[in-house]
Each structure stands twice: as structure tokens, then as C-alpha cells.
Length: 275
Image (cartoon, rainbow, N blue to C red; front, side, top):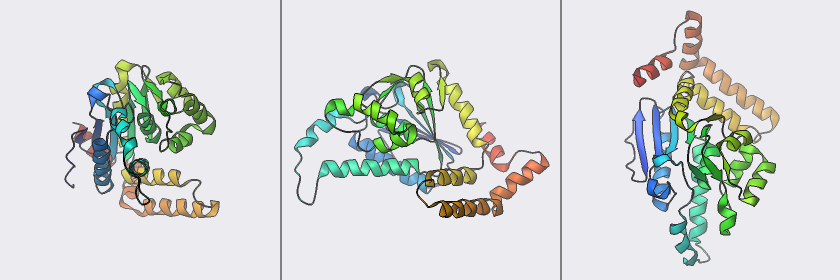
């Protein structure tokens, strides 16, 4: 396994096939600053070349998920010098958008555990994760328009998650809503009482780790490719993935384990790591 990045604004904990990735600026409700963004990009690069990690759990320290961008830091950026060749605000925003894309496309299964505040980019990450668990007491929203700016890079992911009609309503009113609404809107697939977030998380983690890691990665890739290829090319792409999995070691192991009525090798490995 490659050396894990050293971070200050993120807390990283590897537990067997699982990475616990925690936004770690609790005094600022885990608002995203330039340093956190750079650290997150480094972690994404590490994950892309670390297949030993099968699952990423994203949460926030101190009872809050992520309050979005650091407004105090951002205030001073409007006066930065812009030239014909360089717009620093646009470049940082573009890099943020590329990081969001990389997070969504990670081969690992991603789980966002949302409690407390999840605004702006925090809500964006909730919409990018493969699986989102939300506490009833969580508060979400896209407040960017009340600040005179746009939720530029998270908007596409919100639209993909909950549809254009609801996304427009939430962005153009900057409405704040709770965990129950987030579940009803389709942002989260699991809703739980605040006191049950950890128990719910572990139940979902156990379900994910029963699945083959290559099978999950391929399934995720197929689903994220929907709509980007003509129909016949999509059929061929999916068939190729299916064949690769069936012929591969993981597919053979999974089907043999089923026939022999035993646990798969990856299930046994995950259980050992959990202890």
C-alpha cells in the first residue's frame, strides 16, 4: 500500500479495507478552505492508486458534516489580480469541480455520514457519495445565492442526484431543510435518529463489504457511464465489463463460494480486519 498523505484539515484512519476520511476543522464546522481542498485532492490521488482500500467513509468532526466553503477566507479573494491569462478565483473553482468529479468516480464505494450542518459543498459531497446516511437532526441547503454567488460546481451533482425541478427550487430559494427532507428528496438513501448514526453506518458498511470490490467498482463505472454513450455502445461496454468479471479471479471465487455454500475470500478478509 502506498504511503498515506499527511493531513491537518482531514483526519485519515485506515481500518483494513476501509478508509475513514473525516473533515477536521470542527471549530469552523469543517468549512472547506484552500488547505483542506489541497489535502483532499492528495487523498483522492492516493485512493486512485490504492486498490487495497475498498470503502471510503466520509464524515465530519465535532458533530457537523461540512459547512461548505470558508467564507472568511473567501472574502479576501475578490480583490485578487486578474489578468488575461490568469483568474485565480476561476482556477480554484475549476480545481474544486475536478476534485468533485474524481470523488464521484473513485473505484471505491463511498459513504457519506451526514449529521449537523451540511451546506454548500457539504451538501454537494452528500450528493456525490454512492451512499448517503443522514441524521434526522441534520441541516442542509445551498446558501450560495444568498451570498451573491452561485453553487457553481456542486449544482451538476445536485441535479443528477435529485433532478432539475427540485434542485432549482432548493438553489433559487436557498431553502434549508432537515434530514427527513433530505431523505424524501433523494439525497440520502438511509435516515436515522441522531443517536443511531454509528450503528446505521456499521450496518451499511457490512453490506458493502459482502460485495466483491471489483464487482462494485465495475457496477459503479457502468452506472456512471449511463447517458454518456449511445445505447448500442452502452450495451457493448456493459457486456465487456460483465465478461471481464466472470472470467476474473473475483467472479470465479464468488460463484464457487456460492456453489460451495461458504463465504467469499473478500468477506472473510473484511471480517478479520473488523476483528
